[in-house]
Image (tube, rainbow, N blue to C red; front, side):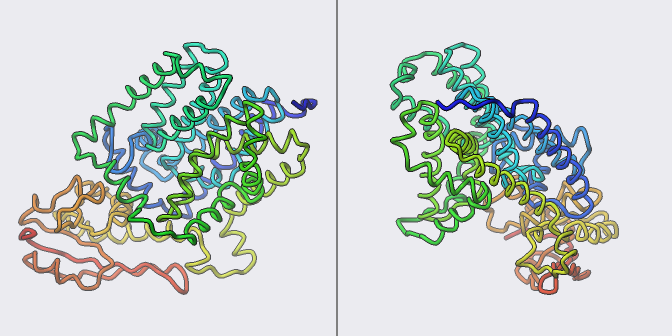
Length: 492
């Protein structure tokens, strides 16, 4: 192993974490004045209004995090998102200690933490509350203590591994891939294969299963809805139809989320398994990357895959690429990768300021923030209508619009109902509301549909109250129609 004089260490990483996190927190408060919530964030906030062990499409951890954030900062833009940049502090430290445990090199540990902290995906995710935020924390914690457990076989390390595994499963079902990677590595590791007979390994797995079991119980009492959604709506694999364009699209997205230099090197390193397998630490990292990567590539070929599905790869990939570059003497590549990714983060956070300074007029296709604009204004306009009809409930025919409306309309219309004449089970609102329980009641219906004849015939009377126009760009704006629907007759 190549040894190098220590230039960087934990104190340098802590300073970097403090500076980056402070910057992200400032930008979070600035963003609260300029953009709105993503629809999924508003959706998860709705879940967080009541504690439960499961929700329609995800395990409960993201809702629990929002509960914590809003208990400190209220039901606000900042309160909903605040835990994201905070959690990434601890995820970064997990990766630092993971790299140090694997390579006993402060330089590799520092740059592994620094590289992860400044990944484009982490810049973006730090301003968004999503399942990936707690998931990456628990995955990195599980990896750290799994490595410790293999090396030292202490009960405390196995127990923390089990706790982290359970937390990961309560964050995202993809945590099960951790088990696949761990067993594949153990089977092929002469040094640690004996742990396959170690009862402590299975005790850790049992602890993880026990911690996860409340969500399993919840699903059993809710038609297994989370698993049905995951299998039906995520992968969309319907047969052996190859979509090479989708696979190339997914690969291209990884250059954006992992950074062009780091991902380029990752693609160059992964095929060298014979070389990597000569060193136990590199071999372990390879097995915590490749199964997930192969699975998502297959899914993207057969259907489509979203860029963030590769999130578990980021932990081991960051350490692997950094260790390779540093120990091979390719430090300039590493510095360049960090520089490019930091510039990306700053450019993304100040995108609107930069385009205004350059005199660039944004369009629907050129503004990455287009999905989080206009919802606050819509909520303000609908709030005025709801005040004129205080006895009427809000009605919507779209999950994302309904989530945004429930958050931005004041007071929050938590009694809103989803239009669902076919009684399908495609989202949380269809699972928890039933318009047939509101026979004879009146509704304020907000929709993008101009013609609602199929809906109108199920009410005593229908009146178009107003059309709400929200111009965003010269080529795009939001338009909604607001109807007053009286005396619901029932779906049939």
